[in-house]
Structure formats: C-alpha cells, structure tokens
Length: 244
Picture 1: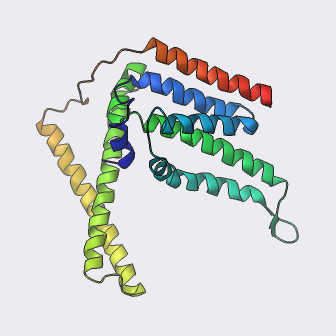
Picture 2: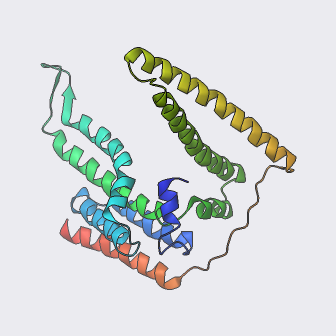
Picture 3: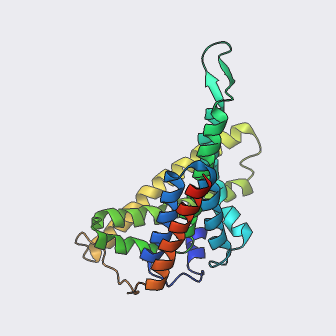
C-alpha cells in the first residue's frame, strides 16, 4: 500500500465523511489559487500545515516525505520564469520574472499542502466509490482505482528486479548498467501485460458485468465540522483581502 494511503488509515479524521474533508481541502485550494499570492499563499499554506501537524497529528518528517516529490514539479515550473531566452546573450537572467516565480511557487506550495491534507486523511477506497454518487461514470472510478493499484505493484516489481540485478553485480559498469536497465524495462513491460491478462480472466470468472460493486460504509455528515470548515475558509479569504 502506498505510504500516503497507508497514513490516511491511521489519522484521527479517518472515519469522517470524505465530503467534509473535501470541502475543507478544496476550499483552501480555491483560496490559494484565487487570492493574491501575497499574503494569500503563505496564509493558506500555514493553515494547511497547521491542520496537518495539529488535528491530523502528522510528524514533520511525514509531511516532508509526502511533499518532497511533488515539490520538484513546483520548482521545475518556477525556475524557467527566472530566465529569458532571445537577444544577446541568448539565455540571460530575467529579474522581472522573480516576482512571477515566487508567486507561482507560493501558490503551488500552498495548493500542494491542501491536497496533501485531503490525501493524508482520506483513503482512496473511501473517496472513489462516492464519486459515482456525484455522477462520475463507474468505468472512470474503476479504471482510476486499478491504475492506482497497479502502478505501485509495478513499482514494487521494479524494485525487486533491481535488487536482484544489484545482487548479481549488474551495475558494476556503464555497460552492464545499460544492459540491466533494458532487461528490467522488458521484464516490467511483459509482466504488466501478464498481470492485466490474469486480472481480466479473474474478473470474467467472477461474472464481471461492467461494474465492480463494493460495500461503502455510510458516514453521516458532521454539520459542526462543515460549518467550521466554511468559517475557516472564509476567515482565510477575509484575512488575505484585508492584508493585501
């Protein structure tokens, strides 16, 4: 099970209705995107981080591990704004892009923390079945669940193959490294098709008719939580507009 999804099963908000947490997280995401980057992004990011470390009781190390990979995309998207292409010299420093890069990085980081807030408190198995009630086609949710699961199975297979190759001194030189990487890719490619074929056969033998029906535990909406979430988002918006 992926680390973030496993973490979501242990947080105090695990048994809350996913709609409550979606209202809070997506409301903060909307605030991070729509409000002025300063001071909107720092305020939204600070609120999301406070919830992660406070009510959700995550450790700073857990939050850092959850955000470090997505933060790479934020950095990659922000750095190009710091340079200009064209003229003499061809590539040069663009001081006017510093503000845009900071705004993009701030908004991206704040929105990322808000999404981590939802992902770290809501297992995928709780969220996907309820999307069908909102009108999302069942085929979409089922494909999303299967892809999500199979991606991590393939990653586990890749790690196993790499460990086996390393144990046989397969990475002792550039030549053997290229050979091992190629064989690893081939093994994963063939294995993924074989796994998909066996999955299809298993579904057919179980009478699959186009829908994977699962039992969803009913959880009532907490009106106080919904009101508190809406009030928090409204307070963030009001504070940002006052300070802007």
